[in-house]
Length: 113
Length: 109
Image (cartoon, rainbow over all chains, first blue to last red; front, side, top):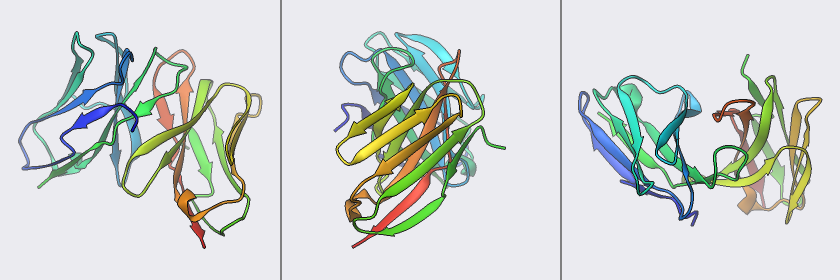
């Protein structure tokens, strides 16, 4: 158990819908990262938050947004969903920003039908 | 060309064999991670390296910053080592991770 909790574990939704994925980092970790893993693209970095502030942005679509709340949990919002958004979405956390061991959650499987 | 290249993409070996997985990168980095992903999907961080060598049990990771290359070695491999091993680099001056495509390792009993 990495200490990083993601919900929901599985989600099936229709095209055009909006979903929210939730992540609770390990106790004491200030950084939260979101990654997308699809069959054809492999693992891709989406976005990082550090202590409530956006720190780095990767290949995150404009239809996607994220935030980190004062209690350090984070949410990834995916809207206007397309079939190609079907993927495993990982949240990870680390103590600081960069240069630390990263702990991954078990992922949220999103299937868009 | 990908910024992070792993080889081989697939590796099948017999239990007990010594395993080496390679990772080459073409960008400046501040650190490199080796990750393990089991068939269920969960990812575990094995090592984080910025120089030299680290050992944990039967796993050894090395990095050569000048040559922009890292290796992950598994000694006395076991079927439970079967997983996808992923190399990921932290870009210098940025906080984002860039991932290799992974190496699928299968250890047969």
